[in-house]
Length: 188
Image (cartoon, rainbow, N blue to C red; front, side):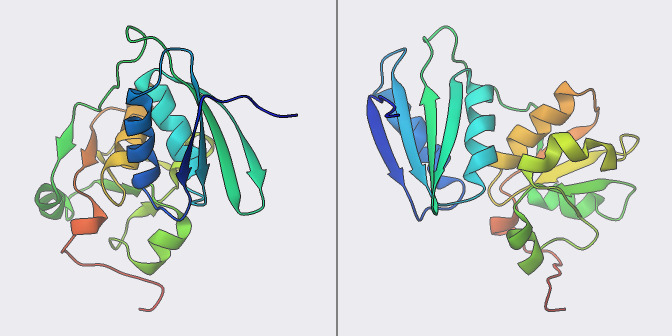
């Protein structure tokens, strides 16, 4: 079966947040009801594009895996429907550094490989795509600081946690890309 699309976006070889950034840009040129095919190789794009579509009010139609290429299909909704949400509680890396010694949960929503090579000691690793299934692992009595590489996936995860009733949830921006505090990895 051939899927009719209005435009194809090649995001192969790009890592988070670039597939989302390029998708947002492509959506500006689409009319309401148009379907965009996004070609990606980043496994994290499975959860990232679904979550972005949900938070922005667009429709994530589905995915077809073709070898190493993930073909995502998204439909642009009308302007009134599509209002991208952002999690209202944002902290910077310095604030996270200050509260690390307190009773908090640092939730890292990057993919497992990203976490393995560099992460904040004591952080809980739950990739964004696994968050719904593993929500019970998060201590809801402590403030939760959600981090990813740049703040995009963590924003989507923070929204999801807040929607599930967790209070004291903070998105850490700019995230691990600019983290200069203590880190651990599989090498130490």
